[in-house]
Image (cartoon, rainbow, N blue to C red; front, side):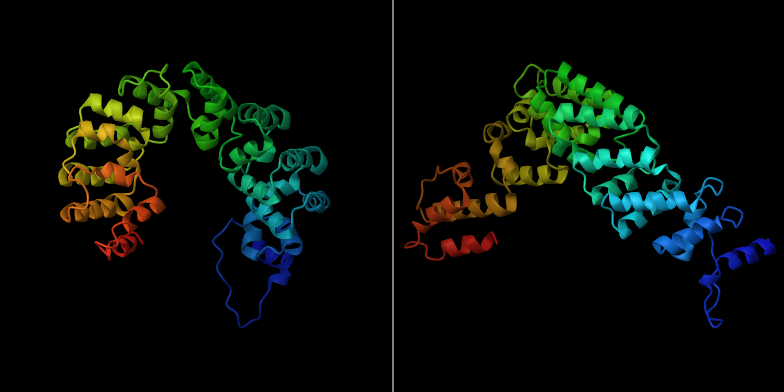
Length: 372
């Protein structure tokens, strides 16, 4: 062991520091796994630190490593637009890249992504998320996945967006699962445009087993009574697709505690699926105000479902306060509805307030300050 340590120090003689500096203890790979030639190469060519060079060298076979091949790999990356910092990141993530056949194995795969529209920064991020990317078959794995995605979403730009937001897109079963999930949506009557919209918004859902999506669609159809033949089905499914069934059940229970029946919940869901995309706390806060303070019934809230889509603090409560003042001063009818006032766009509502400036000079200013 002493001989190996001394041998390693002699190979990396330029690491030595002044005698006044204490030697740091390195808790990395054992000296038997350290490839000193690779470590030296990483320090000399890419300015790796000693520790990072040692760590990376342990992942590269000394039997297969040659400086000449590695030089070709680095030159190829540079010729394809990668700067020194990006190349260093790539080699840090995937040290074995230094062993690739640059023109036969590496360049064709890089060119596929660059020609598709990924920037060099995108490619670095992609490699970081998929360190085994360059070990995958170009024609058996990478190109088929890209081609399928383009068929589904229609443009290179959209495919680039999906790639940049995905983690295991090129996994061994990714294409199979994507295909199966798209076919499942088609079986439920989703149009190509609807599938495209869903893929672009929730691409990670398509690398799940089909049962994952099927359970949710079945829940929408059976639990909430929204037929797959209904024009509402896609909107309803789309709004809750990122929620787990258990979370959805908890949200429904919140509505039930405020008096909603299952029939009213189904009607509310069809009219405004967004109501079920809200968090439990948000639903609870809104219902406390609408039911407990304003006295609205569930049946009324079903017909005035847009209330759920409005900010409680920035729109509903401030305008309700204005309406209370106007009614107290008998400037509007006692039957004046809040739903009408909250429906006004902001500028229109402020114009509405200005007509009361003579009777209530501070009303407009007070309202504007309350929503800041």
